[in-house]
Image (cartoon, rainbow, N blue to C red):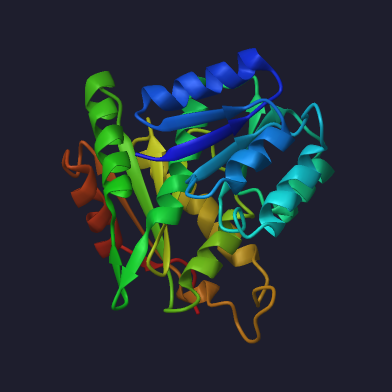
Length: 268
């Protein structure tokens, strides 16, 4: 499992986040300030897979802390999850631009924090092998956990896959997602040339409703992606949906069924 650094000046909030992550099997190291966190990040041989931090720290502005971590070679590649009270939209944008991958709003359900941490860790653990998607243990674990939870609660689970042309599929899919709001409980996981969206407690009809929103988002998307020349390839995006239990109870097989069912979303 992952090694996670949790930074929060509030001992109660810090201990709660640590307990949630430790219960999932992760190793957690705590820091009460930005200075302490930076000392831990700078120790020789010290390695973390994720940084979870408050924006309101006792000794440093949270945005400045994030920028300092990203500017330091020891933390440049470290993914960051911000856990903080509700912020104005401008602050959220500044936080993402500073280098954070995601933000969870306090107060939060333990499951929400764990889902977001899992999503980030899974994203960073995916690797490519000769142009094909190779799913590492972390994504497999997410799929297994979600299918077990669905079976235990008797609730459905849907997987929705967006894929596109090689080299632009993931960028195009992410651009569409920025125009479509998902639930806090939905998990977005990168795969080769696209993304997979895990939709807990969502049946086939609910998944198709999400798919329709994505179609509209693709239709309204700009003709080109920022920083790229030429068409964004939205018309070539393909989408597939599979649902547990109708399509089986093996979550990994569910993912590949959704991939096989992928059809173009928008006419080129």
